[in-house]
Image 1 (cartoon, rainbow, N blue to C red):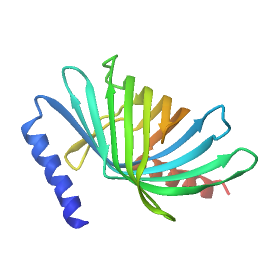
Image 2 (image 1 turned 90 degrees about the vertical axis):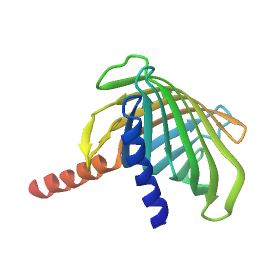
Image 3 (image 1 turned 135 degrees about the vertical axis):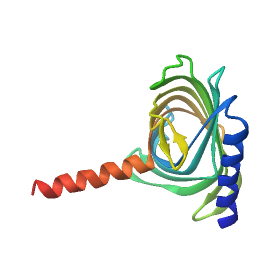
Image 4 (image 1 turned 120 degrees about the horizontal axis):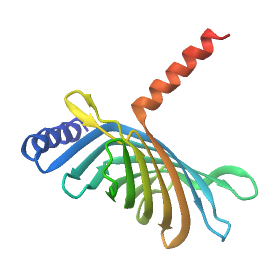
Length: 199
């Protein structure tokens, strides 16, 4: 695991040094997300996700970006007749990629189409499933705040996606919202401090 982390950081350093005139490069420690999948066949569910080490490469001239992260955690809930954990609803995916196109080229806002795929799932109860995949596509809106962190830049601290999702051949309507994990934790800590002061 230490070698994998060291390799990721080495890639970040090399890429940042050699391609800074062609690409913008961003990274963060991960995102916390909330989403919903819905279809008319009454198999809707709510998902909570946590991604670890997000890497983004964005072409400066076209504003087309590619993101990937090595690990994403999923926890799914059903809400048909009652709200409960979905069967085999806790899992990890190890191939997670996303491509987007920023149409408006605004410093603080990203708006444009996206498509993503999640693959190589490992369920906590049934193990690895090489047939499981999730394909998503639609429209992304992000709030960007480019700030320095250990010599690198982070971006898209808050983003929402809406559109189509295909989960192993099942067609669904999809919506999600994700926030930078560090900012989310800072917000929770500040909220707890505020709560303690007003008791």
